[in-house]
Image 1 (cartoon, rainbow, N blue to C red):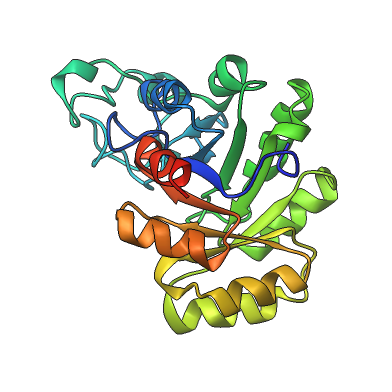
Image 2 (cartoon, helix red, strand yellow; image 1 turned 180 degrees about the vertical axis):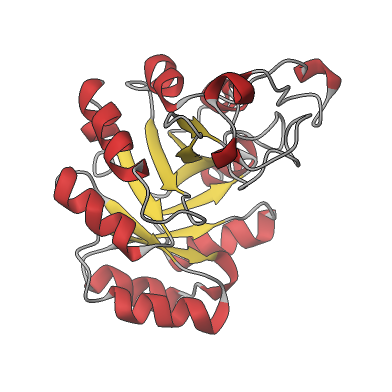
Length: 248
């Protein structure tokens, strides 16, 4: 599906998170309703081994609860309100499971699954995500991403046909990541938006990889990235980016 989509691809970053609470079913549905061809969301494991969709290592910022995601069981996580922090209209939105997201959105849209087990990098997240992808027959609808190269290497062993993109930090650290990433079997590079240039995009393309920019919400910056020839952008406001794309 990644190859089939017309570039540049608009990825709804944590769903349409400018308009609904990030990484919730409401945000994903909003992105779909906006016409976004792709979602981006974050996964990690609960204390009892379920794959849940949440960005932070703790639930403190985006729910009414407290504590580390990895210390809470699925029933404990599901009891939390993941919407009211954003707006009272989203009261009782819940932390989704990956199973739920796949069941509702699986065959409707490309999904960039960011593997965010950064506090427990050698846990069972990758094999459990891979198993769910196989069970739902979603290999053609997935793009993996992570800042951890060994996560992507595990993905390659388990699901070799599913594309993988290395996330790079901003600045010099990201330049080092991209340099050493040249020796990995990857299909994409996810680069901090302000680090991207037309020359860099061309160089990445010459190595047979797609180049995606994260996370951009400023109209002028979105236009600049399109002019640089990126294959896609991650944005909190997919409707905005789609509107700019339509005027190209």
